Each structure stands twice: as C-alpha cells, then as structure tokens.
Length: 142
Length: 142
Length: 142
Length: 142
Image (cartoon, rainbow over all chains, first blue to last red; front, top):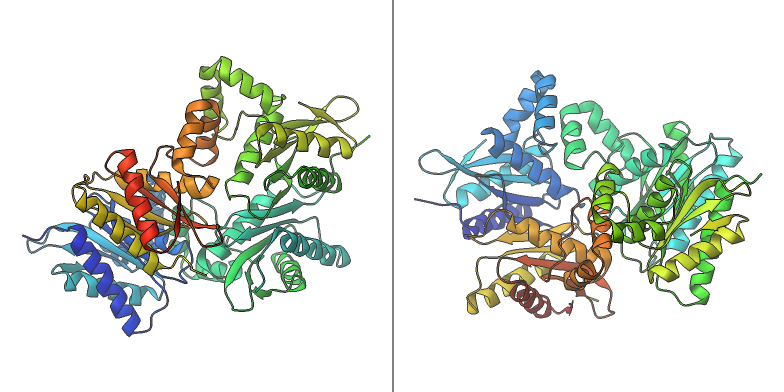
C-alpha cells in the first residue's frame, strides 16, 4: 500500500523541480493536495510571481475535486463554457482548467491526491507533475 | 539599486497625471502597488467615477501577481477565456485583463511593483503609466 | 463652497504626514474617502506594514458610512458588541472601530468625506488626521 | 544581505520539524510567507488535520501584514476585541491572533517574511518557528 505521506509529497515536488531544472523551465510553483483537496506541501521557486501558487493550486484542486486532470477539465470548459462557469461558481472560484493539474493514483487506481504546477507552458507544467508522481511510486492521471 | 519608495510612487503618479493633462485625457485613477501587490499610493482625479480606482487596481494587481502586463493578460484571456475565468476565481476577482497595468522593473530587471491606470482609452491609460514609470527612473514592462 | 477635490485630499495627506514627521510618529498609512466611501487618495509610508492602509481605510469607511468618527464607533462597539458584530457583517467587514477615522465637514456642517490613518497610537493617528483636515480648510468631526 | 529564498524557507521548515520531532510535538503544519504575505513553502505533517495549514497561514499572515508577531496581535485582540473584530474583517478573515506566527527579520531588522506553525500548543508552535528562523540565519521577531 502506498499512502500519500508528506515524505512522498516532498519527493514529488523535489523530482518535479529537478526535471524543470534539467529542462530549463521557468520558475515554478508546485502544490500537492490530499484526497480531500487540502494542501500537504507547496514550494514556489525564486522568481515565480506570487499568484503562481494559486494557479498551481487551482489546477490541482480541480483535478482532485472532479476526479479528472485539469487538462480534461480544460477540454470540457472549451466545449461547454456554461458548465465551467457553473463549476467555477460552486467551487468558490477555486478551479483553473488548463493542463498542469494531475491526479495521483495508487496501485488500485484510486485517486489519493493531486499535483498542480504553474510557471512554464501548461504542457511543461504537466510533464513536471507526471515526473514527480511517477518518481514517488504512483501513477499519473493526465 | 532603486527601491520603490513612497516618494518614487508619488513621482510616478505626478508624471502620469501631467502627461494626461498635456494630452487632454479624461479624468484618471492611478494606483501604484509594491512587489506583494499592496497599495503604496493612489490618486483619483475629480470627475473620475468611483469604480475607476478599482479598475486601475485590478490592472496593476494582475500585472504584479502574474509577472506580465495587463495587456499580455488580456491577450491570454482572449485566446483562452476558460483560463482567465479560472484566474479570476483564484485571485478573488481582483484582475482586470486590459491594457493599463504595467510592471515597474528596476535596473536588474526585477519587478518591484506595478502601476495601474484607468479613465481614458486603455492605450492612453498605458501610455500615462509608462511615462510615470520612466520618469521615476524605472523601466516599464508593457 | 469647498468641495473635497483631489487637490484638497492631497493637501490633507501632506499636512498629516508633516505633523507625523514633526512629532516622530511611526510610519503611517493615510486614506481620504469621498462622501460615498470611495477612495480619492492614499499614501502608505516606507516601513508601514502592508495591512496598514486597509486598517486606515477601515477607520475612514466606518466614519463616513455611519456619519460619526471611528472613535465614537469604537465606544459603541465596547458598549454594545453585538451591534458592532452586526455592523461588521452588513458592511462586509469593512469597518475598524478605533480612533483615527475622522469626518471631513464643510462650512455647512455636511460630511463631504473622511480621513483614516493607521500606524502610530490611535490617538496620534487621529491627531494627524485632524491636522490635515483643518489645514485643508475643513472642520474635523472627531 | 540575506534574502528569503525558497532554499532558506525549506531550511526553516526542516529545522522547525526537526525540533518538533526531538521534543515529540504533535503533527504540525508549517508555512513560510514572503514580505508580501504570499506563500513560499508549506508542509503539513501526516496526522495533522486539514485545517492546520490554514491556521498556520493565518498566524503567519497576521504577523507580516501587521508587522508584529501573532502573539502580540493576540494580546491586542484580548485587550481590544472590537479592534481585532474589525481587523478580521478588513483582512478578509485571514488572521489568527495566537502565538505561532513569527516575523523573519534580516540583519538590518527588516521583516522579510514570516513563519506560521500550528499543531501543538501555541507556545510550542512558536518555539519551533523560532528554531527554524534562527537556523536559517535570520532573527525571529516574537
């Protein structure tokens, strides 16, 4: 069994930032949320503007709150903007529907949390999240 | 090194309003925020409706919070409205994505604050902000 | 007739800060609101923590919104805490009921705006506000 | 000069949690904010209920926003409950006025950020924050 402990959340962030450094991404904010959508760990790199962690959190929150990646939510928002508008309202404005919010799935497939990253392109943000999740022994739900 | 002091913020506003007077802009509200998005100084001219300084603050806040001008945020909002809708939510409804919010950069290129102006056309608002920023010895990030 | 113009609001702030400098007050935030409770001008001195202008605004807003100084509102809050609790709610949490929020009255006695100051002791904050109001040709409502 | 980088914020959290482990404190949440009150890093230990990091953030936010420790804010709240009720409102309900929110001061005495900790007694929370701040080469403002 693999629980999403603080130690694992820290590993996710560490590896995501290592990948970002290797690929010369811009400064990132990385957030890891638990299954209830509550923050376990967060790091914002030097030079990342202060709204970046709110954006990262909005991607991660949407993912775990709705049970699908923020990429999928973004597609839904494009296809049905009135749905996302309603969702923005009932969530209290806590969801950012663009790639970079990825589900953390355990071996049984259950979503035990999510990662949100913001700072570089949405695709790069997402790639860093996937790297971190997999390095910690989970499966990434994109 | 040039810090964004109150004296410099007052200079930015003074010169922005002088340019506006010279070019016969409509009454403006001008706000200067620090690097954390908190107000240093604000002036709203006689005849500017009372929401003008909130609009000016929304332009300035978006710029410093996201590290890019409100002009750039506006372009992003047009291209990806679902992203901006999410951003509006996580920011608590504090961002106005139209030109007139300009970053204040120091000699090292760091964003030390932002200026937001509202009252005339967005392009004129932005031009007044740039004039003020440059007169105070900073570089304008448009 | 003396309207509360931006020029007069700037004079109020200038004189309030001059008095503060003369008496070696701690760094202040000074806000001037119009009769509708909307900001005309604001200055936060170097070294004043970032919540100071919100506190100053809360004093000024309470004064003009209720038609009495924040000192009088504070006395009411002490005597009838349930009343202030309700007032905090209906105002949207915008009122700070301690001295330093002073009405700006014109020659006819009408409240044309208010000043709020925060940073030193409440009594000193109020004294600076009174000095600014009187220097601009108005009567201070304490 | 010592800036409050992400690396230093991580050190603060690491040492605070090491002290907590050594003294067998209950599970903690630790938050480090920058000078603008924005999160740089956050860790919530396994077993800490999910509101803990909001409490930690409320202590840290109050400290940096008002320029005094959350211990001092708590004393003010006890002496003048109507002032704190107003402050709660203008801050948008973001301040927790009990010990555990400590200013991070650099060599010049300037507040460059704050730490908030919640999970054990308020005094122990504060002691862990002080340990972390000092280990990172800063002075703790209690």
